Length: 353
Ligand SMILES: Nc1ncnc2c1ncn2[C@@H]1O[C@H](COP(=O)(O)OP(=O)(O)OP(=O)(O)O)[C@@H](O)[C@H]1O
Image 1: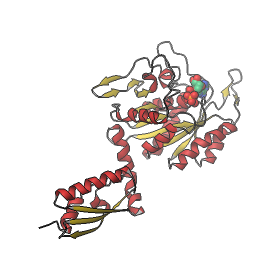
Image 2 (image 1 turned 60 degrees about the horizontal axis):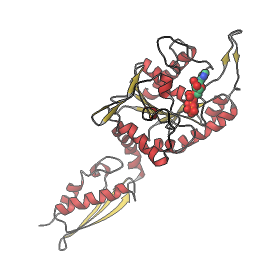
Image 3 (image 1 turned 45 degrees about the vertical axis):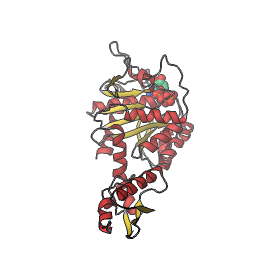
Image 4 (image 1 turned 90 degrees about the horizontal axis):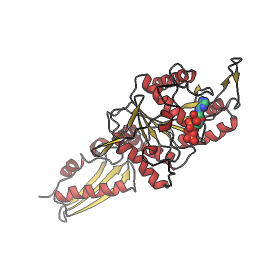
């Protein structure tokens, strides 16, 4: 006796599509099975989500192995692409599963990348303060300081301790209830980082997989300025990641920031909105707003990217505090602290509605 068609289908039904993480049975992947009994040859046509990939090669070996162990002498496999409607139906769930397998946890973590066109516009300040505001609103929050060359999150939050290693995992440092991991924890004496693209990607990957994040509601990523390798890696690793673009009010700054936004749009990442930082200075003498860096940049950028301005932060440092040292974190009663609170509430409303 040799394998029947039905047996081949039964054997292959539980195999999973390497991109959609659903079984061949669910995907309707087994398109044809034919058997030549005399030669003990099984030939199968399979439909999968993506063709000509390393994953397809692995799958090929897996399927051939299964059929040979069941008695086939030779196996012929052909592949075609699953219909678009099947891919569309299962892709969002697959993306979520892929991302969550990166960091573990319950599966409900929302990823938000904070990007800007150029440095110094306040991207890290925005990341840190959004994280703290989300935490103040009762959320479990983490930050990945993915600005690997220009890390500044630890200093801004006044973090002086280093992560602890437990077993094979690194425990992030917790400050103000926010879990933080930064390249700054792993370099000595502020020495410059000279790694190139591929290593940076690996580093970023480690920030997910080798860190014990626990259950997070939000994981914020402080991206390097511009549209470089890391931004590409983030887009690749986290397909459902949302994006916030930070700009200053000067129209030309908005023009530069638009490039970072275009990149998000190109990779199908939803832009949550624009945050305009250093929007105005409030004169102590007159109480009037002075638009020292110009006006209208945030609005213009939001128009170009077809999104909204989530908030505008004034030009002002956090209050100095004697007992807590965190030079970049705005207090709850600070005008910017209040504005960040509003922005965080908007984000929650948008993502958890
Ligand atoms: N609204 C603000 N008012 C006053 N100072 C601010 C404000 N926002 C940011 N800053 C200050 O501006 C400097 C640059 O901010 P930050 O490091 O957040 O920018 P960045 O865009 O992340 O820069 P980089 O990309 O170079 O890391 C910091 O010293 C920060 O404290």
